[in-house]
Image (cartoon, rainbow, N blue to C red; front, side):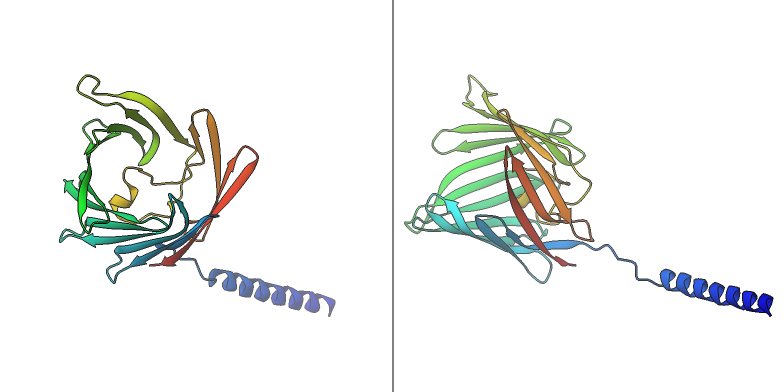
Length: 258
């Protein structure tokens, strides 16, 4: 009788184990999907992102302390027949108000020129600057901005695996000094393997800052800033914490799955 009871117990245990194994095998597997950012919140501003039915970014509204007497920035995006951003109109409002209009041109899928006009308050836009991009050197993007006031700035970006590793800004560009004088250099390192919050946004949103992943550290003028991230199940950052000296600030991100 004792042997029969032992055999019965073993059978029950085996059935229980099979049942548990079956439950484990039937547990839902998370399907990784693309996300589009809808809101970004930091200590000073809140930014919302709006899309059309074709999943194209059409408006960004940023509210908070934006500096220069402005408390709100609105960007409206329009697209050409090729699906690329053709124009962005940006309006700043607050105790002071002004705006810019950006017209974009492409070649072989790459952004090559930006014509910038500034709203003067007289009801018209005046020429402000022209920006040109050069991709002739592998893993390097050069950006040159020529302003109406005669100021010319040159920026050189070094790219690796789709991420900016450094960029250097040169001022005083002229016929006599075509390369300009180095003003400062920013260095980016310790990238993670996750997508940025802005993955999927138009090329012009990223230019000239080229990032596929999220940097863990930046260095500039002898100062070092470290970044840590929390992610959602699809691998997008939901929180970024920036640490500098003994202080830290955080930015949170909200998304829609698409």
